[in-house]
Length: 566
Image 1 (tube, rainbow, N blue to C red):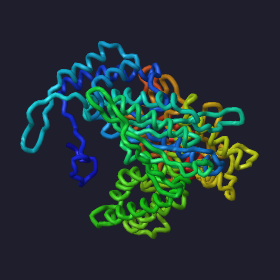
Image 2: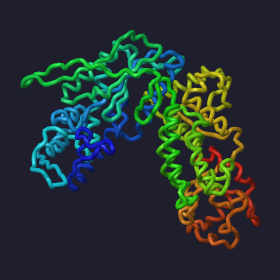
Image 3: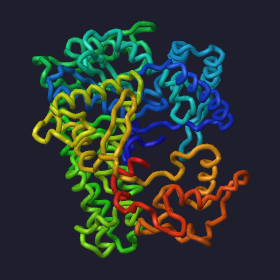
Image 4: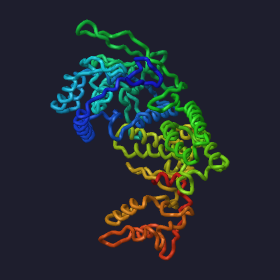
């Protein structure tokens, strides 16, 4: 039994981890991978499923919720949003539910029967401190936590939920993508949680009733204590409430609806958490920023110990502390100034270890002429930019259309004559621009000298004016045997980018690449006779007899533009 929450010993907060035979895991894993590839190729899973599938994650449903709430706040989009949570979902799947779910997705019955045989002939024991229990057989729990196939089997079970929601949805949220296009959003599902979106409380009640009936039909239970709902300012709900009723067994074959239980109503100014995104209903994240600043302060206090060197402190900051904070920051609308405040405690510690003042720690940032320390506001900006690029390049998904609609709305609200994200930021005085997620990204890009060119499904990052020569990959633009030679040399000498071939001044090439250097003639194409150092000097535009590049690289290698192009 594994505790769900650290330090909590209550049995209801324990999760069973099933230990299975190695040979079973190997054989089932092989067939499971084939099944997953077929699902992806054929697109059998509902598009609103975001768990366990390649290319999908918590980012898409979290961003859909954020962008819907922003549209509701600034443009009065009527919306009722509810979140459902399934209780002990993996451990309560019956055998027949597993069979019907897999049949529903079109799997051949010999494979279904193959999986069911492990359930029919199962023999379980509970391993305790005092030894193993007596063997017993399970009727439920056919998606054991620890089984290699469990995630995909449970995905098949939960794929029922979007179908149930769509059939019972009378008034899904209508989100405008452009002047002539809209998209309907009614649900997103991630593992054992579902987010529902409707335009009215009456329609939402109909959807919730259908989901509760699904639970009763499959024998699963909705954790009503964790379910909640909210309504945006543009929605007329009066004094209404949202209710759910569990379906309980009655007699041998009958069922009956239990008492109605009201879902928790969350006001727009209350802070909540959804898939790691922490904010209130209006998108404000001050509470998250303050909590994160305190956590980073505690981590900085640990790093301030004398036994931790400057290099060690920077490494722990980049590898441990920053990733734990970055997920929350990239999904939030935190400003650059707020992110700098979060990183400020680390800045003071790093400055002290480097024997400089905190005001001069900029010299430590960047991998070129620095110590490799990462500036969090730039990392958050880069992650936000990647989310936008990912959405823009998707084809006809709800996530893609919602993001495109947000860009279209940003263009309308800004009033800019030029395209947003390609032009300097214009919207400091407009809340619908400056206070939004895309608005924060646009501000950061403008300050960093970046522009995003959105053409069709293409989303390319460029430096404004085209004058910046970024820290590009050494193999970029090469083809054929020339590229093979470049790859072989880079692998042999442990280099990959332009800055790896230059000295600290960003002007002179390394001594290993000069005449008589140790890299000279150490890597050559056996067929053409072309030599790696000669190829790289040509790539850098280094003239014969000289060891100086034509354009110094020191001007841009520590900027966000270089990081994005990498």
